[in-house]
Length: 269
Ligand code: MF3
Ligand code: CO
Ligand code: CO
Image (cartoon, rainbow, N blue to C red; front, side):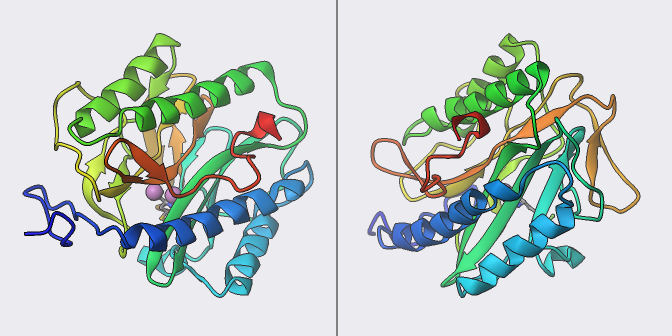
């Protein structure tokens, strides 16, 4: 049996073919480019629904499809999570104010492949505590990515993220996780952002999944608001998140959602 035969592992994780990487690369690049292109809109006075409308326009203009519009009844092309919102913030008429930090999460479908990425932005001037939170969350994602290579386990990814974050006296959200993806939005496995080294399924070349740690300045607990989507920190502390879609290669991984402009991290721009 060819090692790249589209088979499922015993944990139900799809092993993709060499050619599938090109499909993911194209989808990931579009999602990342859209996150680059909206950077100038992020300023005090802008509403999150105006940002979402621009994202939807750019998805359509590219001839792609939004994966989130119509997903379990969700009606927007992005999730926009401001300050103590952990994830799945619904775009709306509220205006951004100076110092707000926000995660924007976009998933597009290009030729049947899903590209899912999110990153942090700041409206106006970035505060010291917010900057530290964003820095640690960004670096935590890359600690996870560095643990990705055939033979390592999903537990190694979670351990790398958790130990780094807790070493900086911040907390990792347990209630949401990364996920397999490819020609579907969410597939096995659940990619936990905490865990023990050496546990969980073994990574194999051809696995596609997201890593998307959410980090809180305070405690890790979250609750979902009455709109059934918006997840917030229970203690109202600030929360940050970064997400990449990646594919396991022979000696590491390919990041499908790299920023074409090199502006993934808000303070690099
Ligand atoms: N993009 C999110 C993820 O990283 C999922 C959003 S689902 C939505 O998995 F319906 F809330 F948009
Ligand atoms: Co995701
Ligand atoms: Co996402």
